[in-house]
Length: 108
Image (cartoon, rainbow, N blue to C red; front, side, top):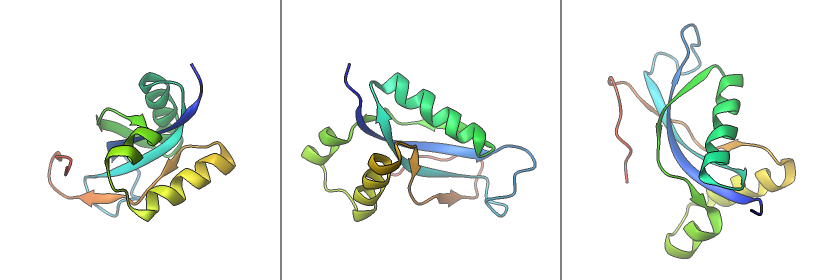
């Protein structure tokens, strides 16, 4: 299968001792990266999160970015993320939307 840009919404929490969220329980964030499938997308995202001392706790099914662009209006941030992913061939995280309650629900 050919590699293309994929996008997904994830929920994350910091590993114990990681104070990067300033006391927030977790966050949800859009992620863009090159992948060949939903499974390869998830693997790449989990590796990137490990490097950031984060834990994946929620995972909306990712989709090829081109499919998302056909059916939904997307924020300019997504286009910037896609350009960065193309240039650097990396996992690119969007804005982290923090939450303070125990657990979260994705806003759709």
